[in-house]
Image 1 (cartoon, helix red, strand yellow):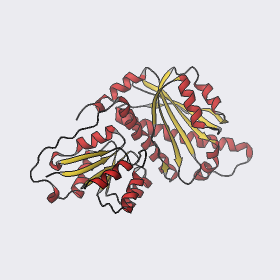
Image 2: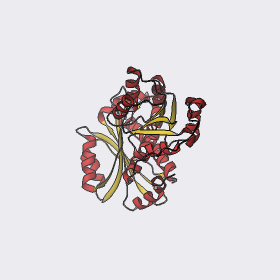
Image 3: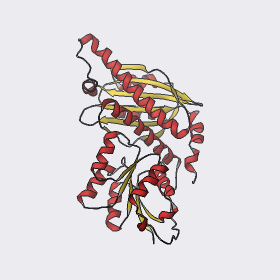
Image 4: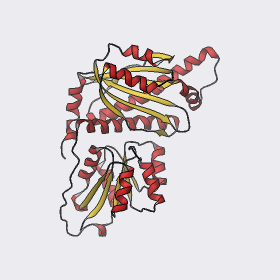
Length: 337
């Protein structure tokens, strides 16, 4: 006798971590899904006693998956395991029927508590027959994607709490880029809108780089409203906008580095934000990066605040020499446990 379990997460690392964390006494018969549509198909084909669900996924995210399960009257107990830990995200998943919420990286005490609550002793197999589960094969990029996902979730949580809003959290982009490719990525981020931007350097145990925070011009008015900035005379508007931009930069960069540092066991230090310009073209931002990097690994994400036109792009660029050090710090995630 076994306990059928569905694990739905686009991250191969997260799927493996959850599967490895389940106690042997559960005798779990695990099936994996890589996004919400995949999960719904498997839910229609199999009967499950328990489901683990990520929130930030392609095709159909966790919120949409829970909504679809409710509409289809699929009553499988769901444990959300997510890097999106902002308060309003938790409120929404519980309103949609989730039974438990666990922060990424998966916390074993929280997992045990959820299993005690959701899996009754009489549901456990009386005779344990070990079931072999084919675990996902990890690539280096899988590691960085999941690490970035957790770190951007920490930054979104800090932003959400600061403004008391819900931050829409897309999947991060993780790439190793030549300088020309980096400039093309920056052009794609800004599209046709002018931006205000700052950069912040960071370092820790030989790992170093720069963070760019870009705020589109179309975001400024809504951001002032959220901050309840007083109406100022025209010559003072740029001053209050600059203060807002610096605040947002410190929140996002500091929270991201804390999230990354916790996973890599590195304490990062960040410099004071430096203004690149206000209401400038992306070409002006690109000029500031010329000559700084030849080849860089980048983490990039666009934050949007629900119900507003606010869009803030966060781009982390690691210098070439940092990559072997960062690889070594995260090597434990490639290992079996």
